[in-house]
Image 1 (tube, rainbow, N blue to C red):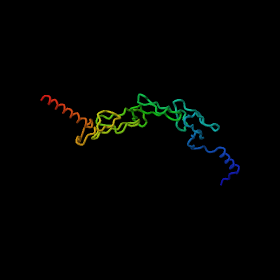
Image 2 (cartoon, one colour):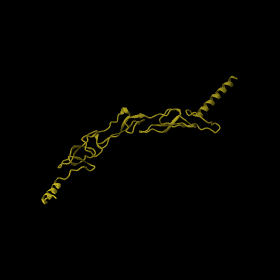
Image 3 (spheres, rainbow, N blue to C red):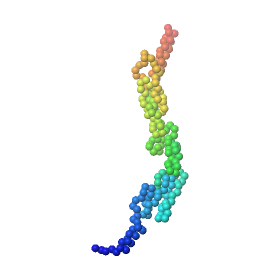
Image 4 (cartoon, helix red, strand yellow):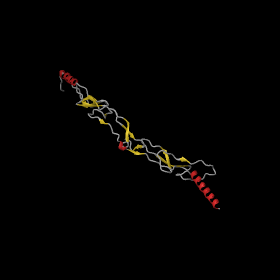
Length: 204
């Protein structure tokens, strides 16, 4: 058995106190550098200089057109995204030092992806079809075939199927053209018949 003198034991304890073990992990808002934990920079600021045993972390605000949205140890800020007009985009919300710019589509257009990097014109529903669901800034028009009793004779991104002119039960007939007003068609045919009849009476 090796004997260790009491002074050696005490000296070892003293060294352990003066020179603690370096940390292997830091808290959420800190980062490890040179065997010590430094405070991260808050949102809106970037790192200028790491902390030391005697000084704290040095940070500086992001410049104009830049942002950082989390606690960080970055030396450069992110650039605000640009809402490209030629891609159909416009600014929905201006960015700050802590948030990015939010883009949206110009009037009459919608985003083609979740990150809204490009826009496309709303789809128009052609004759025989009406708008079931209006387009929004993030979704296209939803069209539906006009059912019996309804019609559409225009291409539109806002018009729904319109109801035929109301008829009496004796005038109604099954079927119909979803492109045209069935009642108006029958009225036109009746007018032509009356006109032809009057011409025949004049000739007779």
